Image (cartoon, rainbow, N blue to C red; front, side, top):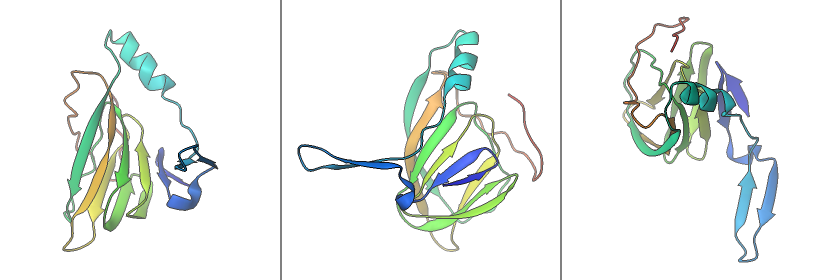
Amino acid sequence: MIELGGCRIYRPKDYESHYVGVEDSSCFYFSPFSLDDLARDVKQAGQSLVARIVRIEVRDTEADMHAHAGATIVYIAFGSGVFKTIEGDVPVRAGDWVYVPPHVPHLSIADKGTVMPEVGIYIGEPDDPQKLYPVTAKASIQP
């Protein structure tokens, strides 16, 4: 597992345990992360905590980093590219999982001339429009 700028990138072989179910399925468990701070913030705002399924079609376009009010967990479904944070860049590829905590500036960029689909779950308030907050490198945003 790679930690960078508060984000975590899990490679396929980074699992901590493996379970084979009675139906011969394989379940790989990765290290847990806490959603306590997010849940507390949402509760203090008088909101409910919800999960929203997302599909992101990442292009090969450079742009400002952005942040979301909620947490995002995505799976790189196909292709490869780079995942950027204010602390640096990490190459990502199909099979990787990425966890982005709330309010953490980040950006995914596909390899030149390709698209890198990400599928995942956005966890936050039900009315959160997932507004993007442009930031510059080495900058940080507040909620």
